[in-house]
Length: 178
Image (tube, rainbow, N blue to C red; front, side, top):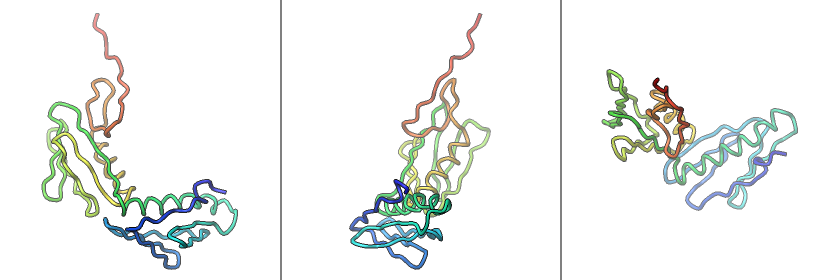
């Protein structure tokens, strides 16, 4: 049995969970999320807890048991607290700007790069070299942060680039002159 899948999920007071056939709806103070549950998975709501079980021991059922539990847990956490990622621009002239619904990156290229900020995400500029991405859906926050980081990943010699807060870059020694 899945170690993650068999754990019950406790529903916080300010979050409501509704079950319709094979769809679960989670509402909280930050928004609403929907998820279609896999065919071989059963979900029960009882005593302010969500209990997930599987119908049989087939490989597909075992695979999706823990996955569905983790996705539902992330939905509940997202509508209650929100997920966040912080990105830092290291390098001379590297900076972030937000104008209306666009994130503008100056990363040492000949032109600034523009990203349209998705409707369900929020971008806070803490300083011109540090931004925080906030959202209800963990997958969307992480994917948007990864897209931004891919524009200029950190390089190992000087450590320049866009990196996550707390990320350590393994530095390499440069060439030595004769």
